[in-house]
Image (cartoon, rainbow, N blue to C red; front, top):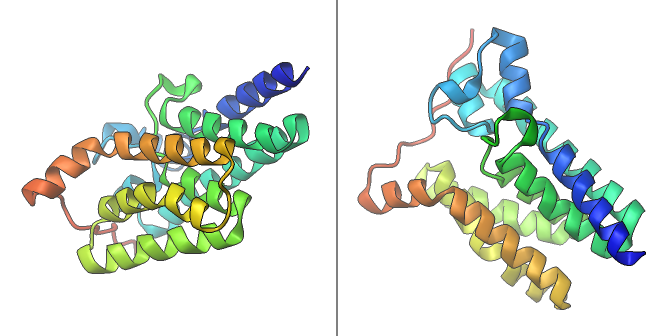
Length: 201
């Protein structure tokens, strides 16, 4: 029964994660697919660059909300382990959405919501890491990579040292890190662009 509950949490998390807010919002607002422009990423940063901060923040909020919903469903179905499974599955769905040709975002907003659903202190820590890194570099990707690298260590520091929680943190961090591999290469070469949202009238 526990295995079935975890599998149900996995399926629910992935399906909810596959709802790509950036693609839906860009098509509703402009009849365009955000993935065909800018960085080609279906995430809040690319939305802000192409359509302005308003839609970027809206996309971030929707992705955050879907992650919270997915993890809440996972907890309802499979308890704490169901929450973890649904959270990671949501990240996979966000990055590789079933409904949108398996081409999605990079998991940063999902990771932030994961932190909140686990412990509000974890959320505040990774958000602080993001903004400090962004303030120093003016690169969203740098902040995102640092969040990915510090997620599991912060979990450990806050007492979430059981192996399911640690595995969740490590795998989630690795997923975000993997999705930013090209950004990392550009950062190392000094070619990564600063974040400049489109100005709206």
